[in-house]
Length: 275
Ligand SMILES: Cc1cc2nc3c(=O)[nH]c(=O)nc-3n(C[C@H](O)[C@H](O)[C@H](O)COP(=O)(O)OP(=O)(O)OC[C@H]3O[C@@H](n4cnc5c(N)ncnc54)[C@H](O)[C@@H]3O)c2cc1C
Image 1 (cartoon, rainbow, N blue to C red):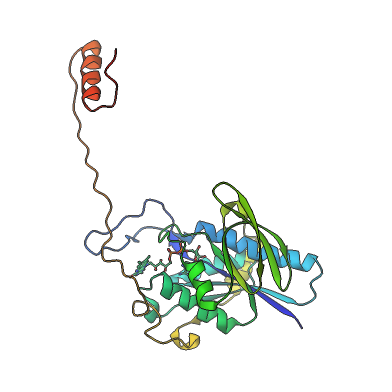
Image 2 (image 1 turned 120 degrees about the vertical axis):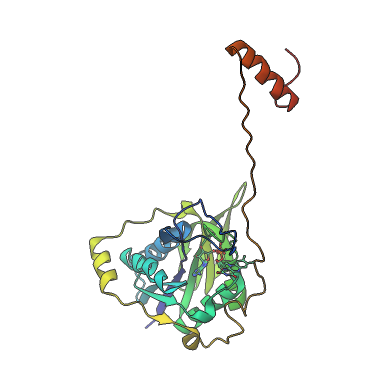
C-alpha cells in the first residue's frame, strides 16, 4: 500500500516574549515560566493535520500518517501531548544528555536522523521561527542535510499529491508560487491557517498515548555530531542591552514648567527652534 508520512517539527519555548537572561550563567531564566508550543509551530501542526484531511477527501487510497517531533528535555513531552490532542497521529520525543547545548546545525542534524529513521516522510513542516532562538535556520539546515528541496514563508498549500506540492509564499512585496518535488521541507507563516482547538476526544487520546523517546542510540548518530560537540557555533555571551533612565523634576507654575520643558527638549534637538 502507498504510504505518505508528514512530519511536523515543533519546539517547546518559554511562554513569554519578555525572556530574561541570567547575567551570571548567560542562560535563559526558565524558573516560574510556563512552557508552550512555539506559536509558529501550532500553524505547522494544523497544516499537517489539514493536509492529511485534504488528501483523504481527494480520494488518496493509501495510508497517511502525521507525526510530530521535538528535540528537547524530558518535559518537552508536554507539547507533544498537546500536538496529539489537536489531531496528530503520533509523536516522538528526541531526548538525550548528548543532545544538550546543540546549535541550530546540531538540532537540524538530530531531526534529520529521526526523519530518516521514520522512513517514507514525503513532507516535513517547520514553523517560520521560534520565540526564543529566533534564527529561522533549523528548517533550511535540515533540508540541506537531507539533500531535499526547501521553501520558507509558506502562506498556503495550493496543491499536494504524492510526488509534488505547490505552495504560495509571502515575500516582502509579492507572493511567489513555488512547486517542489517531494520529499521536501517547508516552513510556514501564521497566515496559513487557523489552528484548531483540541477536542475532548483528542485530549483523551493524548492522555492515553505513550510518547516514545529516541536518544542517540536509536538515531544511530555519533557523539561528535550532536549537542555541543556537533555544534559549529557557540553563544559566548548573552546580555540584555543596558538602558539608563534619568528623571528630572521641573518646578514652577504650569507656564514656567512648559517653558523649561520646551528649553530642555530644544537642547536635546527633540523640538525645533522656531516659535
Ligand atoms: C549560535 C548559537 C549557539 C547556540 N548554542 C546553544 C547552547 O550552547 N545551548 C543551548 O541550549 N542552546 C543553544 N542554542 C539554541 C539552540 O540551538 C536553538 O534553540 C535550536 O537550535 C533551535 O534554533 P531556533 O530556536 O533559532 O529555531 P528556528 O530555526 O528559529 O526554528 C525554526 C523551526 O524549526 C523547528 N525547530 C526548532 N528547534 C526545534 C527543536 N528543538 N525540535 C524540533 N523542532 C525544532 C520548529 O519548527 C521551528 O519553528 C544556540 C543557538 C545559536 C544560534
